[in-house]
Length: 240
Image (tube, rainbow, N blue to C red; front, side, top):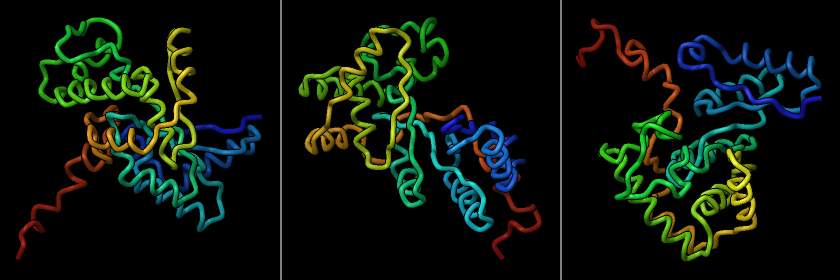
């Protein structure tokens, strides 16, 4: 018996072809075949989540009960609309990448050499390369967050996890330790509860609703990937 399954997005081309009814029928079939209690979605665009929810309500179909978006101290974009929508729709939220692709592990610091040929940097050098102007804000924020963690008497990864669970819309946080020591360190911070003063300092470092990097850039929404979806026919583009 499966308690919950998450549907992971298949990319711009696939998602553009899948209609809400197809998705919901698939969820229903999985529920029957696997004694599924709940189904969820990973990183579904807000407009699509609302669209699927509306279709499910209108037709009495089993709907998504959870959403699985990336969320961290450096990627707070979902606070603007996604998290409020999940609260409004009664959806649980299972966030992932609380360490921002390892950027909040404490290993990557301003002014220190970063080996782009190994570890996480080797998988996505553009996210770690200190020479790229777009990464300057991340490195600067990490230094200020390290100071905050020191003031609180915790490690930066522990602060990162504690921040995500402080949001009332977040149900659970998916962590991805690779070693036992990493797991132990994260679990030691499980009891860390940030007070309002600490959260206010975080807001000063990374304002609410702000992304210092694009956490889910492996998927491009169809309206951004396909020019025809955001352009009128040539003959209809004149204002008068």
